[in-house]
Amino acid sequence: MVMIKAIIRPEKVTTVLSELCDAGFPAVTKFDVVGRGKQRGVKVGDIYYDEIPKEMLLLVVKDEDKDDVIKVIMRNSKTGIKGAYGDGKIFVLPVEEVYTISSHTKEL
Image 1 (tube, rainbow, N blue to C red):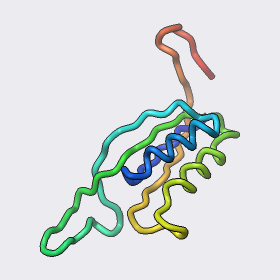
Image 2 (image 1 turned 60 degrees about the horizontal axis):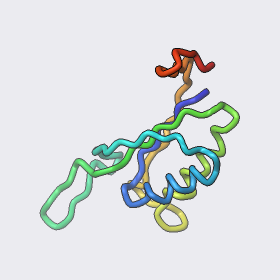
Image 3 (image 1 turned 90 degrees about the vertical axis):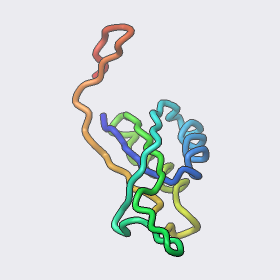
Image 4 (image 1 turned 90 degrees about the horizontal axis):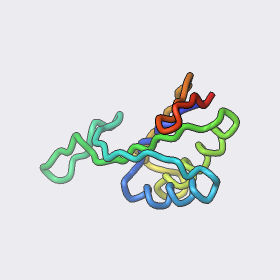
């Protein structure tokens, strides 16, 4: 299994969550986060914003579903056709063990 961490624009979250659900991946944890990328923030007039609001989505999926989930997130998180700076990042991490608290069972 893998954990997918996607940091995306807040205005894209509703669409991404809907498309993930339609694709068979309804289990998601969502966080409001702030941060900046390589561009080191945004300057609007005389004001510099170095903490840009984003959303982080966490999903744990089977290895064989990883590519499908990434495609759904990528397709629905882009700004315009080609995308733009600030559209986000996707990180993939291995998951070694999963436990369900309510049933006291290991899931791998």
